[in-house]
Image (cartoon, rainbow over all chains, first blue to last red; front, top):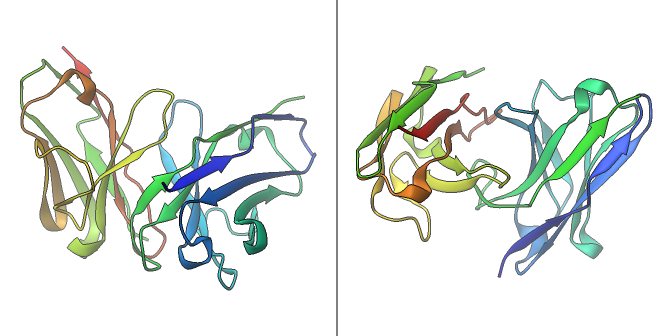
Length: 120
Length: 107
């Protein structure tokens, strides 16, 4: 069974750094792109970027380029999303999701989400 | 960059009724790259339709997708109680934008 299990909720202060994780199981982790999607409170879905764990090829949405870093550790089947300096506007639910096949394919499996709260 | 506009914002219907949701793209989209997702409160989205008209694994046949070019439609033939949710379209090519969503609520 394909599963994506994300790390737990975080409460941070503005300016702090953060790295959240997404662990894949039940499939060949290195063979499928993993993406990150933001959902701000009460709002819609925003695609942030994707990574191919096999070779760490990474693509970012223009809206998120330079704002976050996506990485992966294929030895432990885990993808990451990190911030170097959080802002209050980063408060949101963050989902990881697996592309179903090639680079441009839909997200067929999703993690349960990680809620990030940034508040002073 | 492609922008997807979904309408209506909210659809108020009764169980058993037909739901028709629209997704319009700012420029032509390859039908191969259009998906629909369902999201219920407190849950992650779920893939319903890909390639504009192909149902994902395990999706009931009351859900159907159609369209091409800039206009796409998700139809739910007869609403079941579990279908009341928010629906998003996505163009999953370069930049992979989502539409703003349509909430299907109980009338």
